[in-house]
Length: 371
Image 1 (cartoon, rainbow, N blue to C red):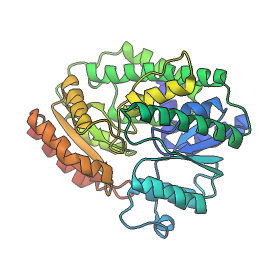
Image 2: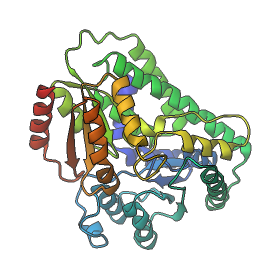
Image 3: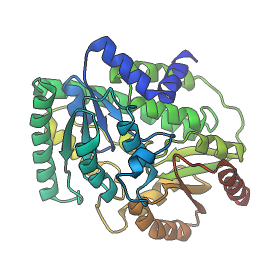
Image 4: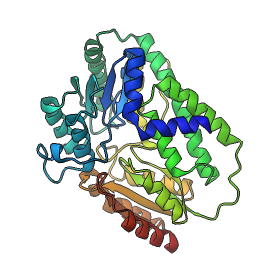
């Protein structure tokens, strides 16, 4: 299908896509590092949000600035910036998430030639009235700062238009996820990964048009009988499409995920009426959280078990980047809650620049065979 091929090409070379957009429109490109980045503000400011996830090349240039226990996302992203692979960026927005990303912000500001630098420090605890008030204030300040950095006003009308675009994107994305669960095999995991990756770097209106046609096409497809095991992927950033193909080659179907580079950033609609900043804040407070945020002692485990049961998962595969402390801290209790629910799980730690495909394949095959 032509539209799917377009999205896969974008995912294969995101930088090329951003450079073309910039050359054609004269607009500004803003790098983001997290699904908590205020993309609606970026779009309302006439810029393109570009999710930075690190590369698969060497990281020696970044290693000179970082501790050896920094994750491959941080090392790869900094190497891309230092070596000119992100030279199309006009600025970067950093969230308040894990320690590594927070400190990367300082190193990036002092060393990376990628334009302006903006920290958006959202609260860690999200389920209190004071957190909502604080978050609304932070996003309001970010709106003012971003308008100045982009050299244009960001009006309420601009924000409402941006909110409408992102709401319109989330609806067919949610339907895409429903289709992969309802009809395993109708679309491969690596193709879904490519679609999600394209959603993070492509002009959003253009992406929405491609996505809508892809979902309409899939609605009419019959995947035939499915005999594979239903697999749920859980974790943070996964920029490795091979993971999906390896799981599926082993006899599993990836039917759902809660990845940061997956469904997590696609959950929840924004109320299009009223104060747009307050509405964006409310979505952040209500959406699926990552381990760098907090709404309750077992809230992530409760949600993982609920989703695994909802998707009728035969097993859960945790996909973590090596040295990702927030996910590592949560893993013991998440596994224990899955065990209590009778749901088998497998932990896989990866590095973007050094994937042991053979070992990953063997472990996935053994896990799927066990189910």
